[in-house]
Image 1 (cartoon, helix red, strand yellow):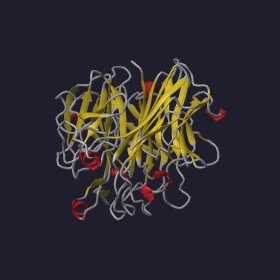
Image 2: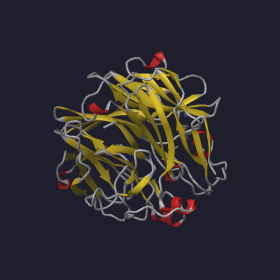
Image 3: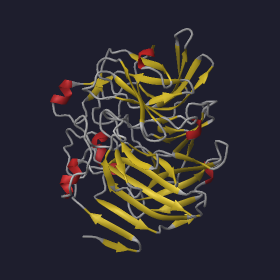
Image 4: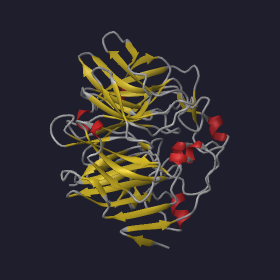
Length: 461
């Protein structure tokens, strides 16, 4: 069954039974259909220079889930995208990534390509690479190639060059276009430092020795170094055997440390630096300062300790770690008391000193973390944080900077924003120079986009 109304085509699929579980209700609740909408209504004026696709990935369970075991991080992947061109929003699409489970549920043939590590879901990020689009995830699964219009092509090994799985958070070196990433899987000893060239082929895979199977969600790069986060959230066999869908838990008493490897170098060259126990999903950025490495990160005091089904163990706050490569000492300091997540900088400043960062405010009022909130703008130099309201009942996720000129504020910030009053979402475009001035343009979507994880602006070729 399908229908089209004013350019809107929906495809109702299997209905999901929504429970009281926090991670599948409210803003996190899944939508039940794939959507195609054409010639979208725009409030304001879309800059003609915005020529490309804004893409975002996240969990959207297709079928019923057990609230006793469901974890936010394991829902079936759904990628959302908006195509902008010539001052128009020509389409919005949402598509489930065709894992075996999704294909079977929809009665479709399974998509081609080798699976790896017992996992084929790819629900965390979506990137453009060498003219192709990939949905990606951590912990051993292959990237999933998508068409420009978000249909699944195959589970990919990057042209036969990727030996195992990949990760959700590659860092693109602005100087070379190479992607630097740290991958892991519970059955593979150590970590894998993977460098993928701008041509989409793997250039090197280096082993970094670690114990206990840590969850390494992200990494950092500078002009000279890769930084590895070896923190006390580790694979828990007892939890896995209990039937938990996400068997990584807080490992009390395990040390926390940062590993430093020459950028593009050997994993055997890693140097380790101890820090206080904590957990970091996402760094804001990193840069070299002589013989020091400066890291700005979103730090949690613990993770998956009391709360096993989502990131609820303590507030996410902005901290700075400064690694002195000469003395071996790491200086740790909190930079702000404003809870935030999903931090980003202008991608041209990744691994370089940046002036501004952008994030989403997190509501911690009830002692847990409610993600999706106002825009947060960080002055990286001073540590000042401005919370910028999007309006009553309007909540955003991750913001992406789309450049249009040489300066850090030359361009636009884009994100999906949910409007509670209409229970629909919009693609909101703000001026990076003056985000508090309100939207430059709002692209009205025919559906709600659940709060998800990460995405990117992929310019037209």
